[in-house]
Length: 168
Image (cartoon, rainbow, N blue to C red; front, side, top):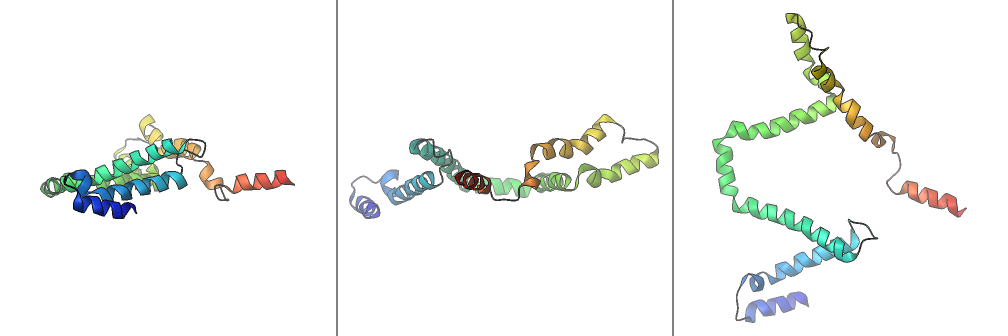
């Protein structure tokens, strides 16, 4: 019914502005945001549906706004990227380099640097910078995300298992 009313308003309204031209799109976006807020409940079931709706609307607004800006400035962005190929390609190169370093470790990735310095006669393995870089992922991230390797059950399985044991 809402889309029928939107068509009627779009066709027969004396005012033709942004709202009347895009009424069906606005109804669709509000409906999807409402459904997401109602079923997803990103803030939790204890928080009201209004706050969940506002939160989801903010997320959707940021995403749609980013796509709108990309569409609006696409030609300028593309021209800059083509004029500055080396600068632009440094972005994915750095992301891949950091990802590989986190994956295989700093020493495995850049061990050839220390070996080269050893051949020259300089030992950089004992410096605090090199030691810190070697132990950074294992010292910080593995401690913070230690639960990743230990979890064998799905997220809610622990809760359901504890409820079943209490019921007996």
